[in-house]
Length: 300
Image (cartoon, rainbow, N blue to C red; front, side, top):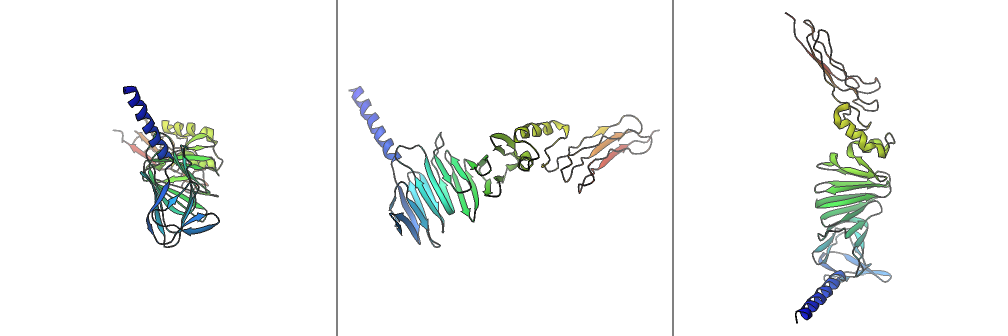
């Protein structure tokens, strides 16, 4: 009897699982002009209408609609269009967004199961809330909750975008992440790990992607060698002189940097005069020279 009950429970759970996989998206909270493409033409979409696999939905200038499936939602703002591909048995729901602004709420799972594709960016998630905007060749992903993996296939770049951050790109402009903590974002460029500090140098061809991580790690150890694109790349390299007339060491920044010279600080007993180090930077940089500061102590 217990064996029979176990089999029945397993069969019921399997049936429920298959129903969930095959569940259709339903129009909800509809307002204004909303259309669905059927056959060869666009027809009016009404509340409670079903959007089947491969269906296209478009909102007009005054239109808004939420498509609901269980706990998941796709909310279209005015002048937006999506196509949904989610065949029964598939593990991945794909939304093709060709225009407008759309907010997604995807169910949390342990595997990536929801993706949004625009002509510029693709967003892949395990479960989160985020908005994708695509207009005039510009794409943007704003993350409200969770983590979204954003892919810029035009420039072979990938980055994880977290709550409060925005990822943006276009056909001509590579992927860039802004917002809280964006200076710590790690990009994959051509399959290589590139910290945010080195991204611009890599994109300009001044640093190979495979060398980016080592360059940033080297800078973090205090040797003052930063990738050319990093702002304030010149490290402060203080020196202390213990004998008379000794100056602080010079801070050196890379030639490509607009503020290349670091600050050199010297502390020495210079016989009544202050002795200081100089920040050294090439003359073509706008703020090439760093500041030198010395603390001298008059000899008795």
